[in-house]
Length: 119
Ligand code: FES
Image 1 (tube, rainbow, N blue to C red):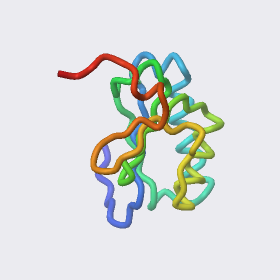
Image 2 (image 1 turned 135 degrees about the horizontal axis):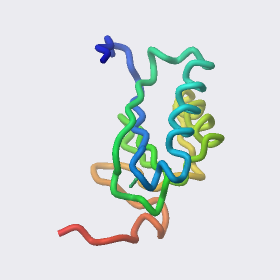
Image 3 (image 1 turned 90 degrees about the vertical axis):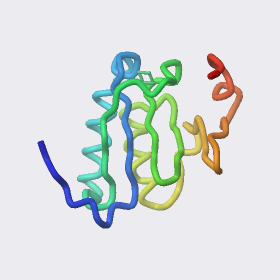
C-alpha cells in the first residue's frame, strides 16, 4: 500500500484491466504507460490507476484521462506510449478518441454512440 503526495499532478490516467481489456493486453498497456511516464521523467505529473471494467468492453483496451474527461479506445502498448507523450504536451491521442467531455460525454465517432442504452 502506498500513500502518494499527489500535489502537482496534472493528469490522472485510469487504465482498464477488466477481463476484456486484459484479453487485449491491458496489463501490457498499463506497463507501457508506467514505462513511458518514467522515461519522460513525469512521475510527479501523471498519476495512474488500474481499474476494473469501465463498461466499454468492445473498445478494449480503454484508458480514461482526467481532468480532460477523455476516453480512449483500442489502446495498445505502443499507442499507450504515444498517449503519455501527447498528454504531456497538452494534446490528445486523436486516433483513439472514444468520448470527449464538455459538460457531458460526447461520442467521438459512431462507435461511441453504440451500446446498451442506460435507463
Ligand atoms: S473490461 Fe475494460 S471496458 Fe470492460
